Amino acid sequence: MSVEQEQTERTIRCLVAKVGLDGHDRGAHVIARALRDAGFEVIYSGLHRAPDEVVQAAVQEDVDVVGISILSGAHNTLVPKILDGLKEYDAFDDRLILVGGIVPDDDQDELRDLGVDEIFGPGASMEEMIDYIHENAPER
Image (cartoon, rainbow, N blue to C red; front, side, top):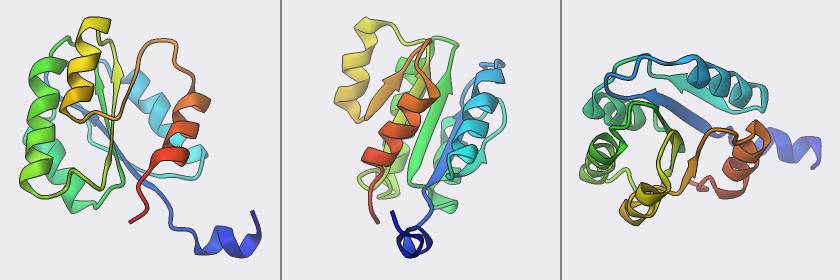
């Protein structure tokens, strides 16, 4: 890629969100730093966000990627609320929705059917996530 292309290419904006009562945020901080190091603009929600707060942050910050970090097991309750909220604001179709954390195999298909683009579980590499975002972030 030439210098001119890099300068005209828009920076991908990512929201890393910790939703619900999940208080484990070390992984979210590591991911946020890796995304920043890869050249993305990153907004971190902080801990214990309600689904509506995540939606508001995604809309107000006009992010390209919503990354939901969840380790509490409440993904079947909280993630659909975020997806519904994004749809209400007409902010769903032009965003990449990622879930990271512990999501049992049995729940992954249902989340994908609801509109989650990809799920990264324990052991997923930073390179894998970064490449996925580069290849799939919407061009808006």
